[in-house]
Length: 415
Image (cartoon, rainbow, N blue to C red; front, side, top):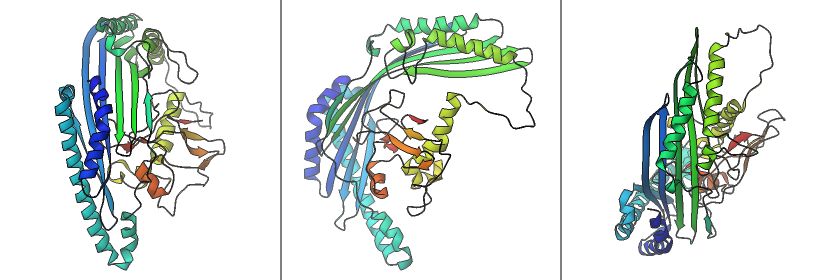
């Protein structure tokens, strides 16, 4: 399936250019393709429980159409290809069919938007709504050619499946042997390799590889009347070496999977035996750990800084943002916290949220959300950047290749 990406590097640009030339009103088209291989295993209470190996591939396309009145809209569709990715002619036919479907969706959206704008414009009290629907399309971008290799010492595709099973089984068995307080434990490990391809009719061609390995541990401990459930995860955008041997890094180091599981087991035993903490009447100093700090930055600062949420595109199912009530009334440039507080999102750092380009082909960069207590800006897509009148900052990504990219955090943290 990874060979399909090499084929599309050669054939994809021509397919997009031919489509734009032959479809009236079409001004741009994008193609995203992804191939992924993964291998995983798990064990509970020292016994192997599951093992999985799989390949997948898929694509999505988007087409932007301009209506004669100047109104513009985008249509999108996506497909999980499976083994179809190994048949070049059939895969290219599926991509052309997807482009045709996305084009029709864009045309329908453009016609409906134009009709709504005309209806709203006839009512002077609703002219502002009409203007908001006719917002400027994304700014044209320069063509980019880049290849970003995945980082690993051990290719996930060449791993011995038995090694993952042994790694999980040994860690789970050693945790179970810590003592009778350990009532249950589960240990899992995953290693995968992914290649993402972005091709645009404007001449952009980006290939970005990702290796990813993760270990998970869940433990239940009981001691007298005490009961403790504890769960944690380690991993890197690297090969299995980061779990088998551990990984030293300034920002996000991790031990090997066995050491990690044993440390978590010891913590579970200690917490299960700990006396209940009685609250005090007086104020106390609270010391928070990195997990809690990450949660605060993610929920209180990160999600409200996503421009699609701020612009109410997600209001029905994910809420809104306390940073923006309207384009005229918002917190940009205002004090929102202590001068001691600064927070940002940075996809350039080697954490789980690391990437060089987002799923619209935009070069990613650090985005300051709060600087010395002042709110500075939102994560955006090309379209929401045009609405807000700012530069795109590379924050539009899809959890699966066949989904529409949304604005999501990268590595978001308190500085």
